[in-house]
Length: 217
Image (cartoon, helix red, strand yellow):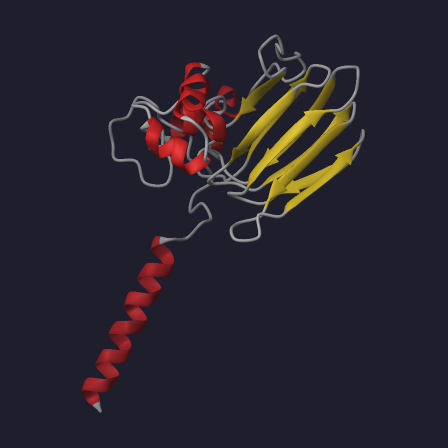
């Protein structure tokens, strides 16, 4: 009986230790990112001494400035994450302004660490995401000024301006460092390249098509 109680106590202690080890909430007021530190990074950047924190560590200016959409896709993302605001470190939130030229797109991509909630500020957008295998269901909608749409964490999603004027949206993301994987860049612009025979077989096209696509990325 004593051995059973000891085992139970040990298991409870281990469980509690695991729970605390993966505690998602900050255990201090803030943890301003110290980008110059060489300390090991665990789920975030090392903390600057809190006594050195200043207002500038929690501040960003420029979200009112339109992004340059003069690029092949006609879209521009202005991120506001832990890189721009060190004070976001460990707080689990970030922003992004997105500008769209007429009929511009934000190509299919994923955020491996964040759910995104998008609000249209100007214009109209066709947005959507695709569910996981085997369904691969497209869930999409045309949004107008003031409309809000959610992209669940990790799912492939996209946005397209479906108006003849410029469009603007603002996204909130559930991570200070959500990450982004643009599908075309990842597949056709990998470094080193994914072998063309792998891609040709995967997409059921000729290798020359793959080579043409890889040349664009």
